[in-house]
Image 1 (cartoon, rainbow, N blue to C red):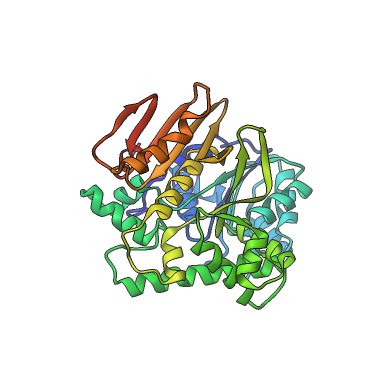
Image 2: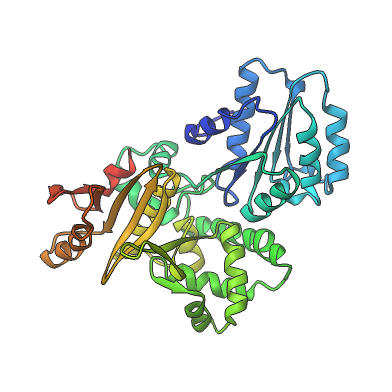
Length: 395
């Protein structure tokens, strides 16, 4: 398998469903986030465990040899010739949404009692809605994100953590981006991935061909990560009707270009239905699309990075509103919650008071943390844990 990074976080989740033939394992995530490699690593794991090669069917629909499979009928013919009904067959289908009526093939596979099925796809709504219709809920979803900071350091063999972090903010976490290459080359690669997502996973889903409106909305949201945003504000900022904005934003969420974060009223115990915040799945792609040069104000990208890491760790995340103050993130997992503030530096008294104040207001015993780039002034302050964000990211 060469020098592929073994992403155990995802492999362990896939491995947990092995031989549960009644459930289709669905691996979702933005294009080029590493889903195909994870599938290849899992197929290799099956081989090492003793599964014969003829009992593993691996189809990557983006490869030359499989591009002729365009419809469910063609896929069914291919599979029918290779599945032995008397033996357990492991079927791995990569980027299945490119096959017309693919859900019919999965329904047929699910009816085969001896097939263990795994699929990847780059549009969450298309996969979940079609599977819910055809498979009646007999599937489980595993979402893959771009490389975490610790994975980024491991993949590119960094020893200098601070240097790695600067380049991580600059390049993003898509595994195909090599930080040692020329800036223009990296940006062209990221722009190419972005264009592919817009055409294949956004425009095709809303059944239009002109990318102009999608690009205007994407640029607005990319420029306003971490800011309070509504469909009305996007409409005002782009000149696109609010109803159209809503349709396109939903398609962009489903293609993992943008990540919504709802605002939660901590006093009234309710979600705000019309306004929230938006972040991006990959900061490197954002920089390429906006053509941003490196700068010293990284507060919003830092907040974005923490948000994605919380999602990667399995938290349900919201923005917390407490009367006239705001907590950056309420991170909920199982029956526990943590309050998290993100701040580039706490070195001034005013900034420290501003960041600490919202965390002192809730009168409960949940953990409260401030993540900062500072190396000094860390520790416990009035029950609030102040931590260096790089230490936190490396956990």
